[in-house]
Image: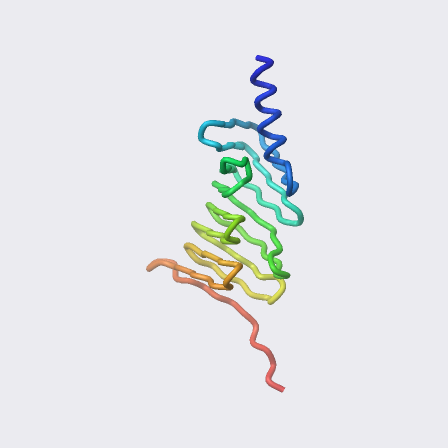
Length: 154
């Protein structure tokens, strides 16, 4: 039993080494062989000013035990600031790849850009923050809905 607690402590301390990531949940499970950590039940993750909450958060690691991908699943809400733009919203699933600065939002996505006063509702949104490219998809029953303010031409 003592060996299990030591393994969990070592795993979590390598998770938090470097950039400070704060994760809370009702349940935690780690698989060191697959390099995956599962946080379930009222899961919340905070990294700097960015925050996500979901039913489940999965963190994937590389061989150097650095997080390579985060997945937030089920009733996801978020509040994040990237490249000076403040986003808030909700989705059923979000995947974030920190190495490539890409966000993928899936399922009844509502994304509010508070900085530029814009709102997007869609089935899925992908944002590449390095290139500035976005791909937004709706569906037959629920098309993309984009609300934005037009600047005054004076």
